[in-house]
Image 1 (cartoon, each protein chain N blue to C red):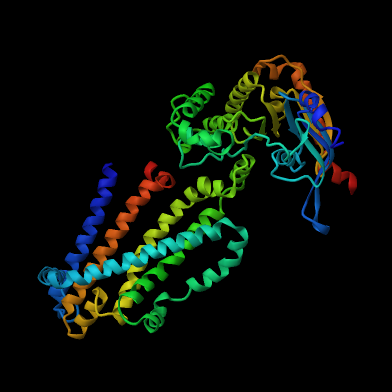
Image 2 (tube, chains in turn yellow, blue):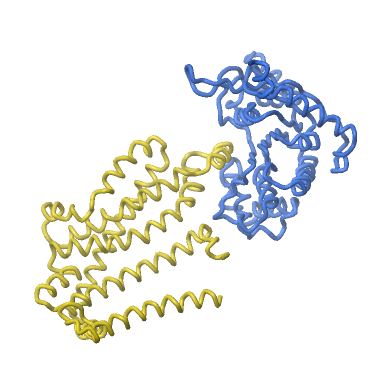
Length: 255
Length: 284
């Protein structure tokens, strides 16, 4: 317990220390706030422009979560499909690896071409960027069920669906939630990039406009907002993971 | 043969030949790469018997278990169960392996309850009875193997011996016609293993489930079984089929008596002299 507290305290002081160092470096080094504003300036801007930032933040969060949810649905379905059949796994895996190695932000222009600028390309980018980690993880979890376990199930005359429902899916949950944590942060990357390129709303767009008017503290404020939302979602999914798939993290608790 | 074994004589067969292998062979793979795992084999197991299969690694012991549990189809020959061909009647099977294969995300109780969720006829009442009758059934079985108070624990909170006890419970909870054990105690230390022999023996004496036990441990085979079949190296065949007639319940002290030691020694010689090493030395 005290060890845990010490670790948390150390992490918190490191984060705080980084900001103090940043502040002092800017002050003592005489760095212009056009290049790198001080944390206190950024926070002041955040507070002052909060009413202006809020709609953008809301838009980005909405776009990200919508894209993320569609991505989770598609990713989970595809993962189950590919994971439950050896043939599908072997056949589809090379294609998946191929597609997942494309930098997903490169498809933003295509989405803009198809759907015009605005919310839709951002949602689709957020979606497509988070599908692949989920598919790969879920498929792996289902496909790697121990052969003895499968024998036990088959000797009970369990159907494929029985095995999937009672063994495959629960077994892939730790993989699934591990991928969700990664996927939700990736979704932010997708939506912000799409907003930067082709949208008139969202934090990405706000930062774009702020930088073109040299409102550097506002650019950094946008960055802070994104960091805050990203970390919050990560923590939410971490908590869900602990509840749903806690059995897989027992080693963490024992130590 | 198939026709003769149908309705009229079926009941008579049930007592004597609960499980019957008729020239059953098994070949893995096809074409030139095919390996014969089991030569045409005849084997009768009567209801309530306790049969142990011993032999060198890869001799087809586990193959026999997989054939009986319908995980594999014989390449030739027929397997009968209760006088009817396997597959024609649903055979309820309980299986336990060396690795406990308990599901880490379920409590011991839920793990043991798994067959009741899947195997008919228990399956259809699972939702209605899982908190009442099924739960009592599981808990009393757990108590019987010395796991009372552990129902709420997770498998990884238990020792290896306890996990195998739970594993036995899972293989028995649905009252299978056949209990198939594939080296269930292989990964345990000697003392724990001997404790589990007694546990398994008690369960068998009470339930008289027909058991097929595959094991490397000859003492284990002689201690537990009514009958031991010694198998040759691949391609597997049964070299000797011998009855073990010690009084039950047997105790670990028995394993130090001359008669017992003599049997184990005999089994050992038989396997060593027919080992692949001995065969290849002769061949070259």
